[in-house]
Amino acid sequence: MYWKDATENALVIFLMKMIQLLRHSAMLLTLTASLQAADAPKKLLVVTVTTGFRHSSIETAEKVLAELGTSTGAWTVDFVHQPEGQPKNPGRPPEKKPNDTDETFKAKQETYSKALADYNEANKVWNDQVKAYMADKMAIDKIKNYDGFVFANTTGDLQFPDRDGFVKLIKSGKAFVAMHSGSDTYHPFRGYVDMLGGEFQTHKAQVEVQPVLHDPAHPATKPVPNGFRVFDEIYIIKSFEKSKVHGLMGLNEHPNDKTPGYFPLSWCKEFGQGRVFYTSLGHREDVWDPTWKEGTPDRKNSPEIAKTYQAHIIGGIKWALKLSEGDAELGNVQ
Image 1 (spheres, rainbow, N blue to C red):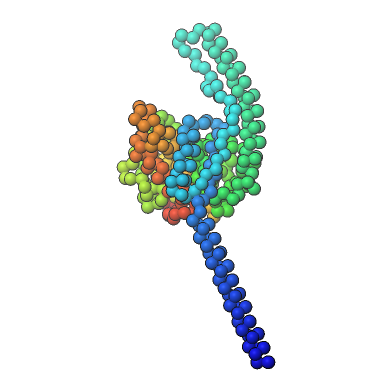
Image 2: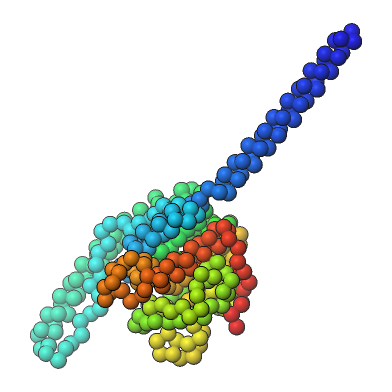
C-alpha cells in the first residue's frame, strides 16, 4: 500500500513538473515570437497615385524609399502605383501674342477648346478606371495589416473606397507619412487635411532656403546640420496652425519675396494612437537621390544635401512607425 501511494505521489510530482516545464516552454516561445516580431521590418504601403499634377520625381522617390527600407532594415515596401492611361491636360488657354492676327488667334482658341473637350471626356473615363483600381488596392480589409502608409508626392482626389475609414485606420495606431505634394491631396476632404495638419496653397519659383530647425533632437531633424541649405520648390501652406503640430523645420520669411512671417516646411504630430510626419521638401529628383544626373548642370543640390534629406525622411518614418522616440509636444513653435 505504501509503495502504491509513493508511486502515485511520484507520478503526480512528475506530471506537475512536466506541466511547469511546458508552461515555461510556452512562455519562452511567446517571448521569442514577440522579440522576432519586434525585430522584423515594418510593412509600409507607398501610394504614388495622382489625379492632379504628376511630379517627375515620383519614380525616383519610389526607388529611394525601397532602397532606404533595405539599407536600414527598418521597413519593407509595397506600392500602389499610378494606373496607366492618364490623359494629358492641354494646360492653360492661349494668350494673344503681338504677332497673332484675329484669325490666327481664333484658330488657336478653337484648337485649344477641342483639346480641352477631348481631355475632359477622356479624363472622365480615366477617373472611373482610377476609382475601380483604388477600390481594389485600398480596400480597408486589404490594407489594415500594414504598419504605415506613405503618400509620396500624391495629388488630387485619390478616390479611396473608404477615405473616412482610412483616417480612422491611422488614428487606431498606424503611421502616416507624406512628402511634398502629399499636402496637395484630398483638398475637399477635411478629415485628411486635419489629420495631416495643413494643405498646399501655392508656390513660386524654385529657390534655395535655409530652414530653421525647431527641434534639433528629433529623429527627423537630428541628422540635419546647422546651416543646411536646399534648393527646391517651397510650398506656401494654408489650413495650418502652429498650436496643432510639433514643428520640425520652417522659415521666418517668405521663401521668395522675403516677406516676414512663418512658413512651415516640416512637422509631426500624434493622431489618436497613430503618428503623422510631413515634409514639404521633395519636389526635385536631386533632393531625393544623391546619384541623379550627378555632375550635370541639371543638378542643383549636392549629393550631400540629398543624403541629408534621406536621413531626414528616415528619421521621420522611423518616428511615425514608433521605431524611435522624439518629442511631439504641440505648439513648440512660437
